[in-house]
Image 1 (cartoon, rainbow, N blue to C red):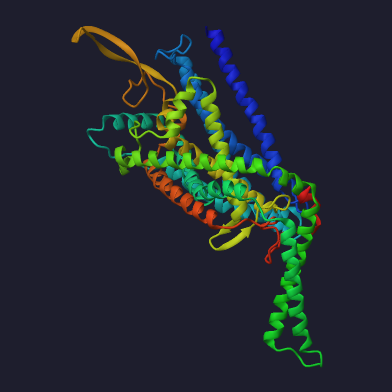
Image 2 (cartoon, rainbow, N blue to C red):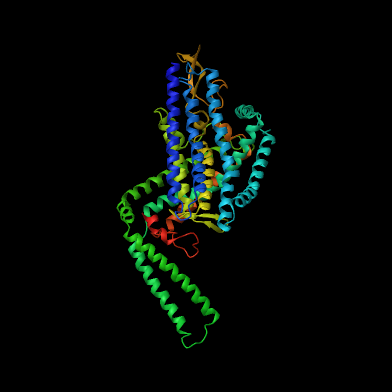
Length: 540
């Protein structure tokens, strides 16, 4: 029995190892797809791949965590023969050390390595001085991020965790004590506070990019793009109009008279406009002849099917999130507890689906992985459509084959933060499942005989919840990391409402917008990071 259990666990870890290889391959392909061939930098490429891989690996640990706590128990609520207290503790510690390692690496990437590489490349682009000087300057600017990280760690280590709770809320008191016992170490509290701070930033990124991407991606697939031939014809007419206007202005100074200030300014604007139209013409002519455009045209029906599927998934996800948040608003322990809910009163479609899929291994873990990947793809779509902004200033555009190294680092850091927030989003949709997986425990029950209460006591399997005895159900390490600090949970709760609102607004905006240009975002007047020499690389 023990050998079989060890074999099953080994198989589970082997699948996790296979997932790591798939994640690394995906990150390499994605970064290579978007990075600029003209301005590629080895160190920024490796950093982007590594940061994105760490984010995805940390999200892959969630289904592993749920699987391990579920696997220790039988469907009838009893522990398996090999799952004694010592073995259970070893399994929990293994997952905990995995979180320690990954979260520490994430802090290192966000607060030191990525800023260092970014400022190193910025210094290199501005000044071709020696490498030593570039390293010193990059370290100097990176120290600010390191100070922020140190402050967060110190706050997390010594922030008071005395959480007010209602006297009648015995289940909440029990969960609070469990979290405090788990977090007795100041080092763990410091790490949890720092990661929660990053998750809060990830929540803002998800509200900005993911919520919009969930509406923009499927509707763009359904509506498609405009015809390249038709756009080329319109562009040719625009070129002729601009050339005629330029010619009329130049005729004013044919006899030697100087142009007025207004005419000179207008002429300059028209010449810039003409250059942009000429570049659009080259792009449209190239894409009209490319085999990739013909292939995409042939795949149009499949894109529509995928678009409809993504719309259904987005609506299902939003409805589930709304019902989950409504349940917290009505039945949670309140603001002072971070709106933590210890049971499910208003169920939602995903929360209903996961327990059903638990009966057929590993369908529930496939669904969680699918949700994470859906979040990533919609986030990518949102960032690609919107670009990277600092308030009202657009810093970078994300384009296939033409993304600058600095933009690539920004992109991977944003995705890293969004993936961190994904764990809490999944908990919001299925709190019971994320806390206990498929665990059950034996609950005492009195048997009735002939309609009268008898003296026979039986034990019936019951799904694990906060009312279960402490030694009968094992809480996932993920849950304890997520709810170490109640005020972060409260912020996530309000963030979920904002997420739903932005999604609905984005859905209305995406419905009202017409078809996108076939070269949407590729040629703009403010382009500073584009080279027409990369046309063949981009479209082929």
